[in-house]
Length: 134
Image 1 (cartoon, rainbow, N blue to C red):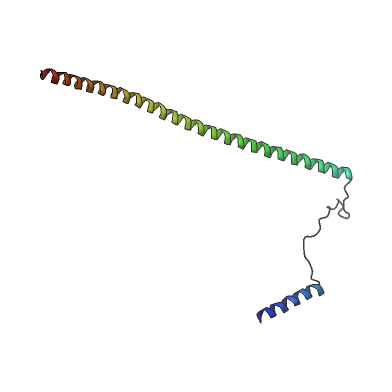
Image 2 (tube, one colour):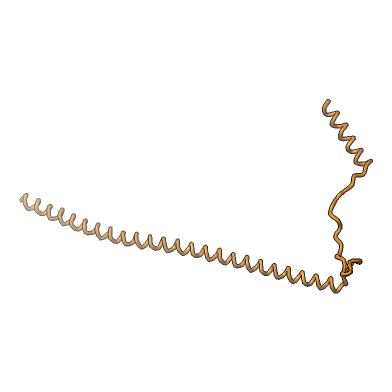
């Protein structure tokens, strides 16, 4: 029942759109500005239009060059920033490596001294035990 009503309304709206004309509103058409007297439209010569196009082209090219320069500058700064971070990271790991190497040498010396004295004590103790047992 509801669908029949919607179908009828749709058919009526479509028929109305064909049978009646509705006013359409939009922006007024762009016209050339009036000349100094205000009575007539100024007509531009072909050379004036060409000059205007050349001027606009020059300005557009200049804007594109400036934008490209800014983009290149931003890319260079990003690259420098990335290199600075990588250098700082390398310095950090170089310091870690140096510290670990120093600790490793220190630990090796301590281990060597402990092993030497342990061997001396075990060897001397073994000699004393063997000589005491004779």
